[in-house]
Length: 145
Image 1 (cartoon, rainbow, N blue to C red):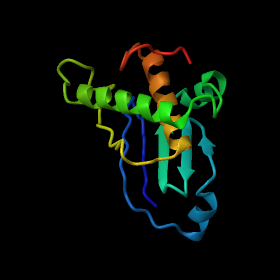
Image 2 (cartoon, helix red, strand yellow):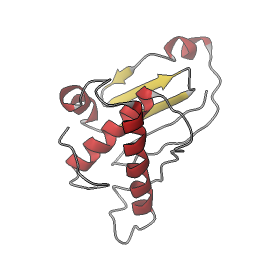
Image 3 (cartoon, one colour):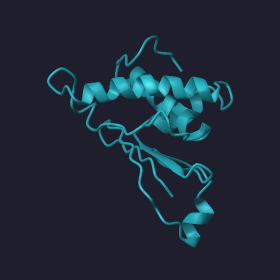
């Protein structure tokens, strides 16, 4: 299974693609959403990608502020994520200008790869959460939710 991992210790979002063999236990959990404290895991076995976000407060924000799944089209989410990730990566490369504690690692998000709705929904909502929480503007208008 290819994995997109977004781990936020201070506030870093890292996404990488790797092959991960599924064991019987992990196969049963492959399509399940797992929430433990402030960890959100979304996996999509069909597209073989997984997103893991660890950031204090994101889980509660996701359930209390994010618009429901299906509100945005997949095309909209992919488009926004492409812009957000490009700006995020640009800021990572400029630690003298942007806080390196906020932008620690680049995000490997390929606009030609079809990650599926759940993965794009989660990345998009993390970007909205990040911009609102840390008063950042990655691209254009920053929605309050």
